[in-house]
Image (tube, rainbow, N blue to C red):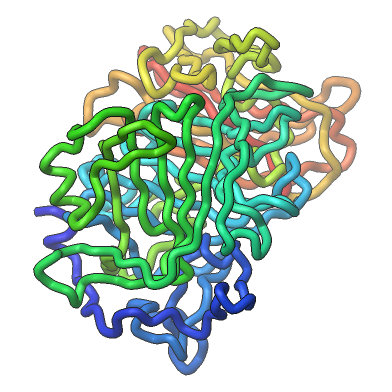
Length: 489
């Protein structure tokens, strides 16, 4: 049974309500970043409840960082979940932009593939991903993306700032419409300067835009004030569009490419009552993909906490945000990507990583095939032929004493479904004479799906170096390693 069939759908009550929003046409433009994060209805104690924010214009507000979501947004047919939740960025100057929120993607055919998250949305880059949403003083932008086609993609501008995938101005200009260059590229690392593509964007404001779910049932249509951005690839050969609303945050996405009559019939059912062919900048284009997330369903268990952990195994994070976007990671080259060079080439590289410890040498390999090797952000595999075995990690100068989080993202390629491989993530602290002052071990259970494991450690007085490493705890299983982290708690 599909998620849509199982879910309790909200009755769609009041059409065309946009709450107490100001009218941009009258010069009372709201904050454009208000269109990134979804809203919630609240009870008399200001607590979020399961209801459609369109139906409660007098008792609603934005979801707050750290609050569980009382509903998921799903597309027509219930194939994909996409929520827009806020996060707190401890460093607003991170790479020239401040991280504000996350737009999730989760395909519901992966609903039961990880037993740590029974019937729960979770981060699975092979069947979903995210957009990291943020803003600089001048622009609202996607700072990074992860998807099943190319995995980990930070969006760099030419001077190595994040936020290359521009959306619209961070001012009332967002509501007056316009166009601009959006030079951007994705690469695992960026040092000083980077070569970018000649993409362009066009943005516009659309009052009471209709989001149609079923042309035969107007009660399911939402008419919402919307910000639209069209992102054209260099040469206008393809285009992506993103629609944002105050009520739902990211609300609709479309992909277009050059040609006519290319829209498949199934897509017309998934995105009904749409324009499927149009001319942009003199080029005929067709819609080739689309999602509209205006159907609301109750999460399994009543609420969903993206900042939480699995109820089955609390070492596994539900929907972790890569530390790159929160400027906190003390480890280097966490995704094992090579440096960008002026010619535009990069490759898998293990800078800062090494193998240490007593025991047998590890056997190394690489995860091949998309999405893991699609953009130079790669995964090294390690394998223990006998135990004990050496580790795989990196050593850094010790940060100031205090509480920290540590972890890594792991999976076991080729492991039969239903089986687990044992490993541990180890933090070792030494003083200036090489003496071990403290060791923290996090046992983890690795499966054939991507999981992010996280623990806590206290850096002690007198430590001069800290090593974070993954060590196999059983033989003859390949462990794919990426996304290592050590961040202030």
